[in-house]
Amino acid sequence: MRRSITFPLLAAVLALTGCASTAPGATAAVVIDNCGHQVRVPKPPQRAVALNQGAAEIMLSLGLADRMAGTATWTDPVLPHLAADNAKVPRLAENYPSFESVLAAEPDFVAASFGATLGKGGVATREQFEQLGVPAYLSPTECAKDTSGGGDGARTETLTMDTVYTEIRDLARIFAVEDRGEQLITSLRERMRTATGTDASNVRLMFWFANSEAPYLAGCCGAPGIIATTLHAHNVFDDTREEWPQVNWETVAERDPDVIVLGDLTRRSQTAETAAAKIAFLESHPVTRDLAAVRNKRYVLLSGQAMNPTLRTVDGTEQVAAALRGFGLAG
Image (cartoon, rainbow, N blue to C red; front, top):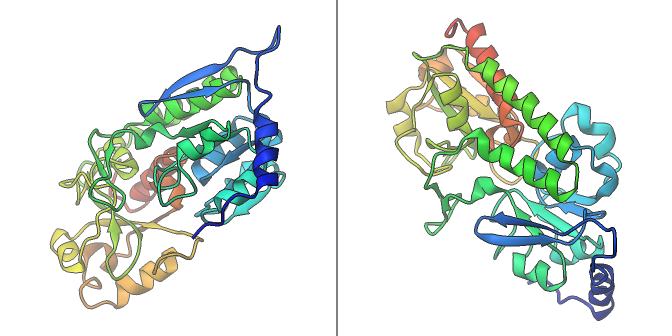
């Protein structure tokens, strides 16, 4: 059970966020329609907290390290070119931070990549933050999902990179760095445009994020779907709209993928987090060791962030494309 917020801490947060009235000549408030919720940001944030790595890396890519008061919930090392800036930002927690620890950072804005983070059972709800005057933004990649069945939810609409670009554009507008946002989007679009030239139309892929007992494998319509579609490849579990359904190994054997894309995670919350652990399992388990991908050692190692809907999905697309060409399976 979370501890209640102490009065001095609450008072400090209210004092910080209560002075948001617009003075003459000040920047006008930004209002974003965010998953059907109106997010009003009175002025460009100066003490933002990114509650997930995906949001953190977008902020860092926009050159906002000096306006970040903390980050949390990391699955992977930060992108190398962002490491120096990331080192300047306090890490509140490797996994979910407590609501109190986020408030202690005195945020004037929070952003999350997942509804499970910014919602009941996560760090806190939007309403809890907004009652304290802290605007709370959720990645639009979470908007078109049905989470009523639990787990990671099911996609009601097929995700595309345009939704990731919307997130970048929203955050750039909130921080009043629109030009930086458009430059970043242009660069990512060009890289994806180049990747579409890879023809892997005869390749059957499987994406395994984590867990060896009941593996989380990618359904049709999330970030792995973007990767497969861009490369004209086939995801062997594209017959489910669940984001990360848990599938038994006997079903995997029936689908028998040509290539297995493995999440190489540094977190420690599931079994078989690292790619090395996944490969050891695949090559020793009686059901999986005879898979075509395992016999031929056709593995592609991706960060967890590349397999989630983030700007790193572009990196993942490029890495899978290069690996398929290296295997002689794509032109």
